[in-house]
Amino acid sequence: MSRSPLALLAALLVLSTGCTDGEDTDTGTDTDTGAIDADNDGYTADEDCDDDDPDVNPGAEEVCDGVDNNCVDGIDEGLTISAWADNDEDGAGNPGTEVQVCEVTEGLADNDADCDDTDPLLNVDDADEDGVTTCDGDCADDDATRYPGAAEIPGNTIDEDCLDGDLASAGVLLLNEIHYDPSNDDLDEDGNEDGDANGDGVREPDGDEFVELINTYSGPVDISGFQMWDTESLTDETAETFGIVRHLVPDGTILEPGKAFVVFGGGTPTGEFGGATVQTSTSGDLNLNNSGDLFTLQDAAGADVLTFDIEPLSNNPNESYTRNPDITGEFEQHNDNTPVLFSPGTKIDGTPF
Image (cartoon, rainbow, N blue to C red; front, top):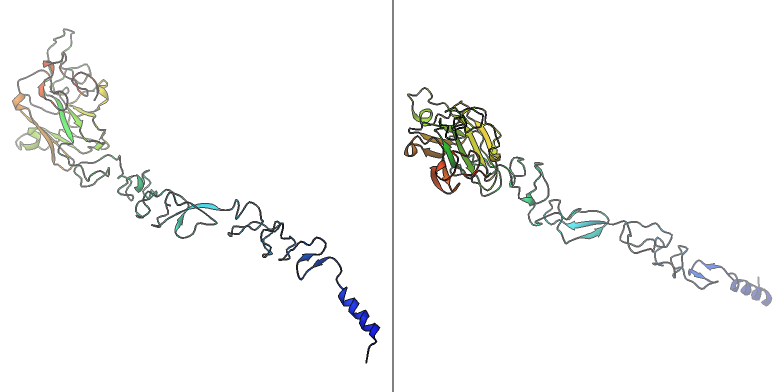
């Protein structure tokens, strides 16, 4: 069927004027303003920071994905966390390698506490809970008794304080003063015999004997189990006291570096003794014979730490023999250069070690 020219003209007019105003959903052009919304997310290009992505616009929720979803303050604002490179995968990060990430993934750590990111054995873990990490020098993080500053036990083949291996027993303690002939005189005429070295108010020849030892090591030393002997108890098989340890140092006896350790034969030691560690013999008697004897100190394993031969100085001194100067000097009678007969726990001049 044919159409008249007027009908065809009317049809063309309708087609050409079918969209006269409003938004063009095909091109994203607002015919009222001319603004473009290419991704059709309701935000035009002048306010949308990515008009090619409908999920990115000022009305979107910001998520941590490496994209500025809401067009505010940059990428992932307020959502990232700090992480550090963890090359040795020990859980501790390398300082100076901080990055911002959405989550800590493989090769990263949530801290910057590693002291050596090439060695997984050096880190801030404290596996044995001794308060010291391998970064702080713990040489045995599976043993809470071994760490820098721990009391070293001489001669047990174990390096407790993580310094240069086990400490040899010989030389760790130095005999600084020894008293084996308490005076029964009253030189100051105060009505009391002068030999009361332990300060309990009674001069008793066995109880007032003493030895004074000094810890010469740079750190604390655990001398638990150390043993003191005289000649009879150690070597004279005919003596009634043979085999009897004159003093067995109790468990938990720890000497700080440079401090004194004093053992009296008996009695009730009374006084400050310069802050020294003070004990009385476990046998009730050091049994040091002032006419000649050999004092022996052994470690817990029975190895000799030191010996002192009394015989060359067995002249019934009625006072102690002490080093002068303390620690480094030769032995002399205490009253040779001081007004007193002994100074257990203190230096020769009465001051603390």
